[in-house]
Image 1 (cartoon, rainbow, N blue to C red):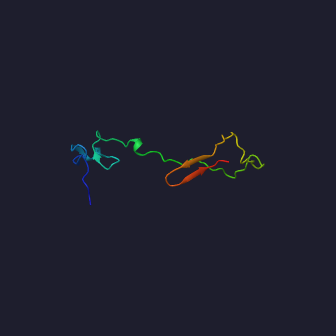
Image 2 (cartoon, helix red, strand yellow; image 1 turned 45 degrees about the vertical axis):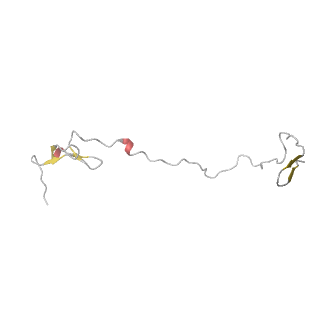
Image 3 (cartoon, helix red, strand yellow; image 1 turned 60 degrees about the horizontal axis):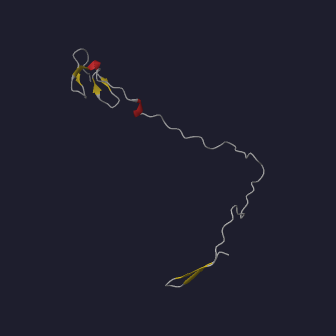
Length: 100
């Protein structure tokens, strides 16, 4: 199949509907065939850069200190106030709370 070419080949702009020489028309990034004065290149923000994951793991990690970590359990840092015996009476029954 042969196509028209040369100075008598015209095309219609997809954006404005104006007639342009076919050799002067350009295809945009979205597929529209437009005239040379209507052409708009693709904006860089439409194709963002690929995001790479941050490196979090270490290759062959080693501890800084070979000694074991000592954890103290059950030593109070602040003395808790002592509560007295509290007796509550309700409609259902009796409740006693002791903190000794």
